[in-house]
Amino acid sequence: MPVLTGYIASRPIAESRVPQHIQNLVIREYCRQRGLGFNLSATEYAIPHCYVMLEKLIGDLPAADGIVAYSMFMLPSRADRRRQIYDRILGAGCSLHAACEDLVLASPEDARRWENILMVQEALQAGSRQTG
Image (tube, rainbow, N blue to C red; front, top):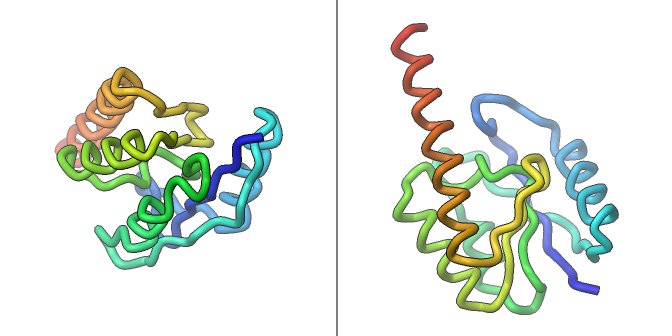
């Protein structure tokens, strides 16, 4: 059974706050439904644009088969940083999962799909800031 390490946030995700215990429940249920093992989650620091815990999880691969984040919207806002993360995870022969969005990143094609979704979200947020 593949085993994933959880990744949760202590800061807002896509401008919403979700309690950490709820994030863990969502991740645990995601893994249970897919027959995946689940290690306890690492919690990212609340500092904006800080990804210390994510970097640690990636550095520990392939000790786990991958990382399951509560949401893909926890990833860095800069596309070049995200691509580096994808490359490192895929290069380790591992995968990245987004529990809320029910998505798996296990190939370069998956990375392109994730980037398309993230770019749409970014455009929607930029548009709402201009009209709000």
